[in-house]
Figure 1 (cartoon, rainbow, N blue to C red):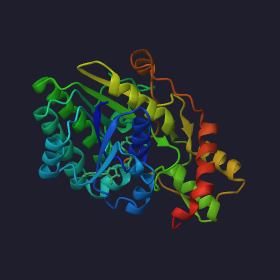
Figure 2 (tube, rainbow, N blue to C red):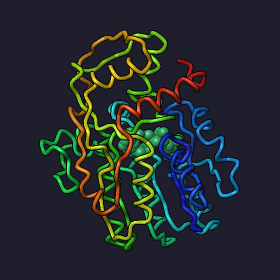
Figure 3 (cartoon, helix red, strand yellow):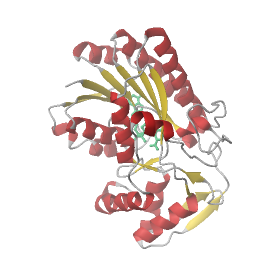
Figure 4 (cartoon, rainbow, N blue to C red):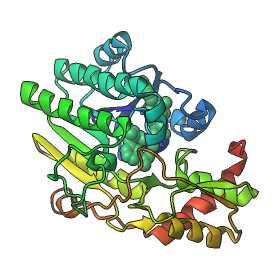
Length: 321
Ligand code: NAD
């Protein structure tokens, strides 16, 4: 079976993806630097069970490190790359835009160089709904104008897409761009709203609500995202971009109320002004993904939140707060 290099494979999405790929018979090399964007111990926990597999190898290192990449590519026959490693999150990118350029753009270009040198037969790039910015074309379609980003994170992701397109034209690397729409589920990054709100409500901590609660997100359950990535890995093309969303935007207020109902606890909220860099709405048009990738999200928001909360209640001791 083929060997896939997954970057950022100890993170939220990466750890779920690696589990699925191993169960399908792939060999996995996970390159992850365990940065302190959130607690590295949580990332180690994400990959606990994977470390037991003979088809899984963890390499602790940075995607910007040429020596590590040379070592990986000269030691293993890497056929495919799923590039998930990044500094994620809009808010932090406003405070540290240069670090986002370094990791999310330079790191991606570094990896594309190795993809070209070692002739990988597929490069899947994790992009984001944030590349659409506050577009007025709703729902967002893959071929909408893409010059409206409102955060350094979104711009870095758009640059990553453009570099992917350039390397596809230069060297013919087959590339699939996946624009993920707010992913949630077990092991979600701790600073993301669903995880943060659940912990605050459960522990009776005041939670910060930015804006008036009417912002909307097209929340997408992790298993559906993994289905989409697996389809992209097998998708024959030169270069294509796809939305992976639910096509069902939910308001912040409704998301909060559902968590309250499922936890059977009330939130203590403090309303704060709109957050810089956060868009008003995300809403994926998924017709292209359905038609070409066979992508079909299956988990409703109600059931996804229930699954997340079940997982949280069994695992909450992993969080300090
Ligand atoms: P995550 O932070 O849980 O995972 C990212 C992983 O990458 C981490 O384990 C981190 O240690 C690793 N990493 C970061 N910089 C690295 C570097 N320089 N070298 C090696 N490893 C490095 O984030 P996630 O939520 O799983 O997101 C995965 C990808 O999907 C990211 O590219 C993110 O931008 C993208 N994305 C996520 C969402 C979402 O809702 N979670 C939405 C849109 C796009």
